[in-house]
Image (cartoon, rainbow, N blue to C red):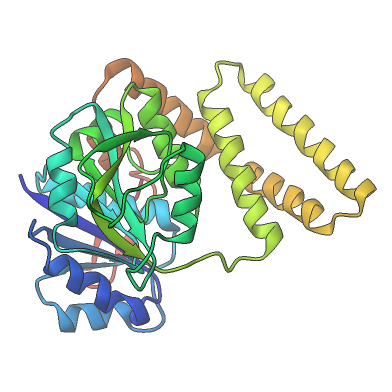
Length: 325
């Protein structure tokens, strides 16, 4: 039983100290699993030397956020933990944050729980998070963290998330067809698709560094890719009809971009099309696996461990192989 904090790192030296120290100071006292995506700045060595109690897993190459997260999730589930707390390398938590989320998880109707995300100074709500709250029609009380209500929402970003391991058994892990960004919205859609809810724990506080530094066409392509993958996975149409709809929409976007002279939109459409074609097999496999889980209502942890037996990465430190979902 217990709780495991799972942190995916990639060149995280400048942020990781605050992240790990905040988890170590948590009243919930979780174990910590760090999965390093082949950082070039010595992140893994730094963590291993500074915090010997942290379990550091080193991957030979950067395989993307979702697949790497699955390594930590699989290891934590194999250890029999009850709760998984996922946090970004540039995120941190108040001492009571994780425990407050665990207490809120007594309501098993919620599959995902998120604390309030503050900016990196901890003085105000993170700007990006505030936009999500505004979309949900939520206004938080002052001072932050004073509320004790868990509110049902459609989605909140996964810089800080609490999950039960039983939720993984029900819906599976992160979709490996997402390299970076969008895997959290797809996961939340799966959670809601199975009848569980996504919740905001207004009495729990965490911090997250400001992001948003990607160029326009990359950001747009990631957003569209996520929307298309959700359509491809959850729409009850044949494979030809589903992919035909996507192809038609992409062609229209490219033509409109050419007519309007919108270079960023054209680049985004081309990039999105390439991502979809490259991940076609993975998307369809993920759709099939989720349909199996939806019918059986269980088996996600076993699937996480066994689905990718042909997709192996060497862990340098242990010189053993680990399956990546």
